[in-house]
Amino acid sequence: MHHKIQLAVPSSLTIETADQKIKTYKVGQVARAAAIFGVQRVTIYRDPAYDDSRFIASILQYMEAPQYLRKLLFPRSNELRSVGVVPPLKTPHHARPRDDIREGIVIDVGTDCAWVEIGLDCPALLRTATLRKGERVTVKIFSRDPLEVGLTQKPPRYWGYSVRVVDSIADALEGLVIATSRHGQPISPAIHDEIRRRSAELMTFVFGAPNRGVEALFQEAGLSLEEASDFVVNTIPQQGTETVRTEEAIVATLSVFNIALHEST
Image (cartoon, rainbow, N blue to C red):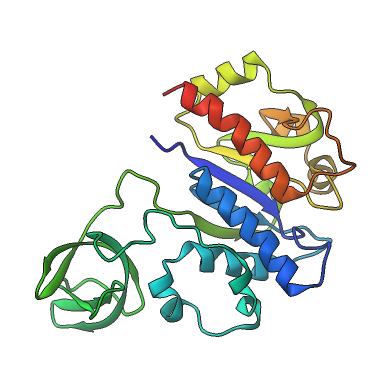
């Protein structure tokens, strides 16, 4: 079972450097963490101090897409010029040639049919009249010669994350809200028990900016950190460095909660 997890990260994630390769790699680490721990959605909330949401979203979306669809989904752009520095996700929906369930893009439509690029030798025929050119679909191959597919539901195994940008941190708070802070409480048995009890809910993990913690970001949005969050936790107690980078905090936090979530299954 994959639990419903959302990461909320600030648009100022990349504020510490102007070097595009470093920025790209940093966002790539967030994408890798999201995929490793089965995150369903990454939400970028706008930080008034620095808004790099377009760049962050572009890298996250590019990495999530199967390699064979990227040229169709992403025209050349300045944001993507350094994507070669990030390692691939290699998630199940980045299909191999022998896989029968695949992500595809509608490249042409006809009368009661469409042709879908699915990363094989030729486009696949899909007999349906309800799709639009450019639409992304999940399909299952039922014939390889000729190559024909049908629409299907995403399989129960992990199938990538979605990306969205919201105007403020308040717009990212959904379900069970877990804010991360060096001033938060250590993970306790009571928190583990609450996670087990509410494991069917969407869990939103909220992370601060490189130059400001969640306390400041909540306050700037007119929110009380304690009232707007179910828990404020410190997942790296007695940290040995002056600061913990956002991408490092994400890995540490999801590692800790991954144990609690899977103890409940």
